Length: 447
Image 1 (cartoon, rainbow, N blue to C red):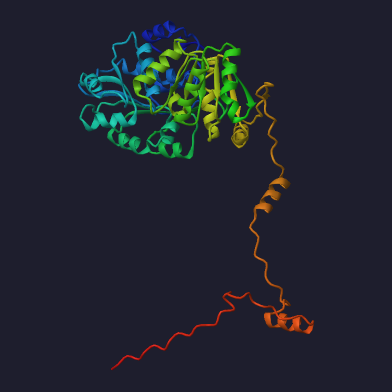
Image 2 (image 1 turned 45 degrees about the vertical axis):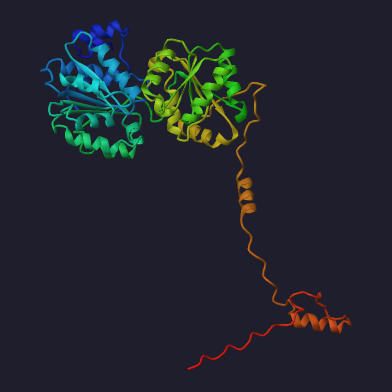
């Protein structure tokens, strides 16, 4: 199948060709005709499957035949969890809509709200937004929803994980009841299913990959290493293999900063990207990384969600995620759209339980690699007998009770006398040898 067989208009096909694409991905081949037919869809797709074009192309096709948006109104709303993903979706809308008379805008927090208000004043056909900033604009009467025809919830699972459920429900209450709804999520958790009730009308369910499956085009491996050797090992892998683009994941913002600084001191150009960075700093770091001005981009999970870096060859888990599903999202940054990629995890002994959870989730044992200088003895899982022995050793002991036949104090004295032993003498000056003082009688109160 090729794009021209999906029913898209000529201006869209021309833009697709200019982007260098000819054959749709599985999610695009299923989603585009469904959206064009006007149906609500509920799609499960891992990152890197081409889902953004899967809803952007048919959305633009449908909007191109209608009336332009009035002042401060919008016709299509795309909600995303992060600024980076919003910017990426906005870029796709501009690229694919290059030959269509449609306007678009992207709004998110962390930057001045005034230019966003000015862009909305003329009316926008497609608005890509994060929930918080969208509500800020609504509260200032900068955006109106009465002309909304289409709603897209992109990476809905991540939006719920980030605590946007109340904002999303408030936005849904403000939208017209008659509209087309498209929901995309990496997984269909119970919370996602609950959200779809009352939101989607007779949706077509689309799933293009097994739940929580890693992309087959990504080669995965593990290095068991001591915590103190992780930075040195990462630096060695980057320099010895002459890697030019490496996306590295840490669990915390401070950890991302420290790692980027250490790599810079070791002669490896690096930058950190996370929620505490200003939007300008995050945009610059990402641009430098895409243009190969820096070799390593260190990111937290939230900051990296939605990053679209063409043909990213390497992803490194400097620290394993606490949630196993996040491992699949992380390594999904590489091996996108059929390209090959490599995902390496640096695992210290304390993280072995996370590794076991990941291997159980993806249903495969990841191969262990080793470098003599940095190698660590493989961590052997404890046997059931060892676990029970440790639990027994840590169990608190009950105090020992005096046996029932233990002699009393008078019996001990009698026994000593019967054995011809002198009685036990108290040390002079001890509390037992001092005479007991009597308290003076309390005087009676006089009537």
